[in-house]
Length: 287
Length: 282
Image 1 (tube, rainbow over the protein chains, first blue to last red):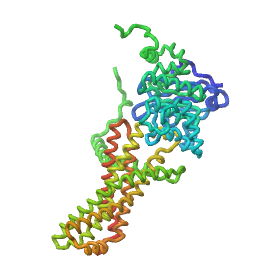
Image 2: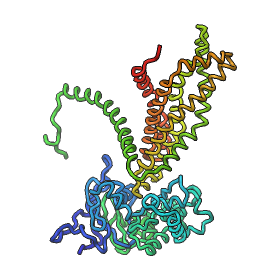
Image 3: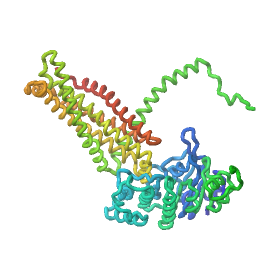
Image 4: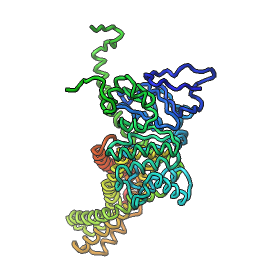
């Protein structure tokens, strides 16, 4: 049985002693759906990921926090196979996907849905065409079947009540509506894992709260594993079941929200204190 | 205090060898840049063409692009074609009048339109209108992560976005060139007959005697090549945008410049090749 990582492991690339009989990650684990080990990625002279170790818990909302430019989006793109690492392993349900061919990766991506930072809706398509896109591309379904699933999602994501939503094109939608249409598009093919890239960026506090609720509700209602990239600490502690912090190319802290709050790691302390979630331990910087 | 050891420092290079290396760098660098320039575009073209024989086949995307490049460009092609024909007739008449041979205007305009003016001007117009549009659209899609979104649905972005644009532009260019030819001839005809009072019989007789199907085959063949190079230039620039709105604008400018220059440079080599292959009748 695989051991979960310690709540405040310091990002070492060792993955513990191997049990007799082979790699401990090469089997489906009931708790951990994705396991990343020793992930490295450089862009020219820039070493962005420096041996990332990360475990994503099945059916939970896993948040990856970190400052701007720390490589959060790069890490997420690796999880989905949009980027190829220089070295390291990414185990999804007990299979290392790093050596996958493009065709194998194409099949694997059906497990995933991704909600982009600014939704990344196709400008040339209306709302229905956007949401239906994965079904149209992947299956030979009738128009009625597709519309049934699209309307079901519009209903469940509170979009059906928006007047004329089906025929609207992306520029006619508000920020929150775009996110929900993006989520509907990600959900339409019933993925097991949903990736959110900074879902609350650029939204006002009310819209941010609505998006948080949407993420929480989606996780509960659809039973998906959620991976959320964020630097919004209020959102993180509102919706996260598990929090990992990416700092200088490594996961420096990982654990439950309570464990993260209790962490003594200076980078995480600074993040938490600056966000105002807890009071600074000393009065530094105050007049 | 820092210490250095011989292992830390590379061995001393003699001055003549250093100069030789610098010279070699200066000679090799431009060649590498040129090879890189053509290589990257050739790889994209190869990928786009190989996607043609892979499922799924998206006919609708191809037809959409045919409409955008072809139907959308009809007004501008007709307008430019009409005035190009009229102006070339005016120039031909001015020159031929020196030798009292204005009757040859139909032949002169017919051949120059068929072989040169129609394919080149059509290529330049399509580059300005559709090429810039392609670069802007693909660039915007790149910076708003729409291209990444396609990949997340296991859709090959080159197959979905580049292949229909390249094939549609390549196939529609000969059609637009023929439209340019026809409208240009109408412009030349109206100008010659109604403004310069050239004899109608002589205009048509010289035109039909001197212009051959071969002139149109040359023009249409060139148009095919121009369609390919302009669409690859535009798609490459748009697809590879990095950054924000400013970079999209720069990519559009580069697409138009690269497309226009590619058309004019390839025109020189193509017409040379055709004239060797197919000499003028005397």
